[in-house]
Image 1 (cartoon, rainbow, N blue to C red):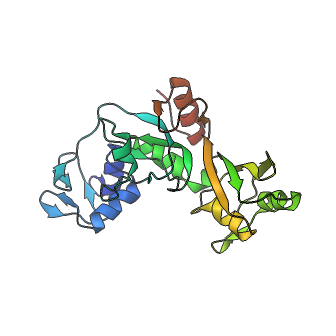
Image 2: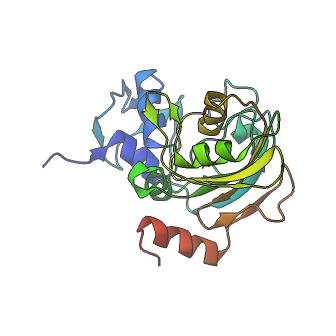
Length: 237
């Protein structure tokens, strides 16, 4: 059995970045291991000297779980070259990174953490975790629109999974998805002839946006965290 663990898993486990981000950083030549450029898929141990962008990585002593009400215009990336990146916007004293994405033109709930196990558990597509959104489109729609959205819409060379959709006004509705295709709701509406003018995520699994002001953040409660871990099959302490 090979010694150590894969670099991307190690960086994810200690709260540096997600596995996907680690692979990208390695491909871009931004990670070194013991003075040598890292390769995606290589194995490392805690004794190795690992630098990301020339800075040594270290394990965060405290696990952090945050809920942020993201404003429009903020980009869900840890990439510092993006001037409107969510990390600089949050300005949290410990290194955290977003769980998944919420596109730049959308607002609402996004989770951030330094716990790689939580991220990996939530990002597994087969788990079909619920995410709820409030949507406003550019004109009034009929019953057929709601039914089509719920049945599934052909986008991105696939058909979206059946989902729950409820009208809340002449041009507004709520939708609960169990998948996360790129700009999924916007693409679904466009495929049916409508344009999204406002998109707000209000729930991720058991975590709700309720009462959190735009641009504000809070730590998850112990009860929220226990329920979240239970849903992704992670053991709680």
